[in-house]
Image (tube, rainbow, N blue to C red):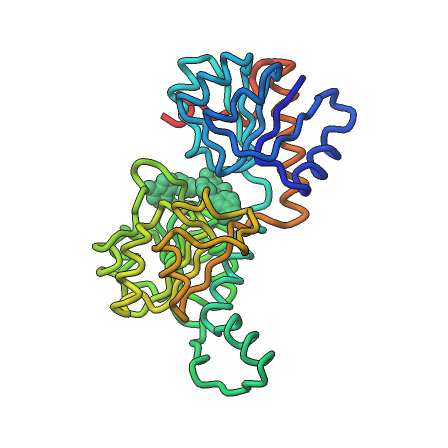
Length: 334
Ligand code: NAD
């Protein structure tokens, strides 16, 4: 099957090509994001393969359909960038990679928490400049503190296990409480209680209409003053302008972000020679207690390998039966 792969980087090409060996799929690699303007690149392909910042809205899907595309293979877990209702109406099937390596994201989340708490990013720069002073680097023991984990699916569950390993008390919130998390001592509480009592809040729920701006001014005001907030989920789970206000007031003690609502114009590219046009992002970068990375939590060899293999399996499943194993459809998530 011919597959148009959008937002291709060298690493995508390497891992996908290796996984596709012997599958019979012909992968056509394109660097641009998928959008209504770039959708015609898929001409002659039966499937497209897309990533987190590709846009598969109704307009793009309609254009893809005109080009002969019948299947969208997401090479990521989140599917908030696909209009599933439009895909359904156009009879375009959609599949994702539900769990490629929850460890990659969970371990990265722990890394952000540790780096932020102990200010490793500041220490790194100081030592290179011959500054060995410790003022400003004071952290706190994780042991005995309370972590609030919002979303205890594949990733959140591993986060709970790691943070419980540090001796943290775990508060959790999910629509479906997880028995493994309960066995680890996590206590499921309403969101308000989680925010009010946690020293660290970390977000691992999907981006849906219900969770968009889950962290807004009101939620920040209800946090424990000086608490840490970490988001490795999706950018729009938080209102970035509210984060700036929360940091300025000191209500947010420290902030770790691997995702950003407007990241599509920034992340995955080298923009070091360009002016930063996003004022909110620029403001966030000015705080000494903010650590931002460019959507790299998933980026391990194991994860890329698993993503590529599941993506090829989804393509093969669609080609052979019309029902890829990891289909996402409006009916399935309803
Ligand atoms: P998952 O589907 O296994 O788990 C998500 C959990 O969130 C489920 O248990 C679900 O019940 C829960 N949930 C849904 N709505 C909720 C709500 N309103 N409040 C609380 N919980 C809710 O997904 P996962 O594999 O654990 O991934 C979680 C998210 O992490 C993905 O949706 C994706 O957006 C993000 N992610 C980020 C990266 C990265 O590199 N930064 C990589 C992979 C995934």
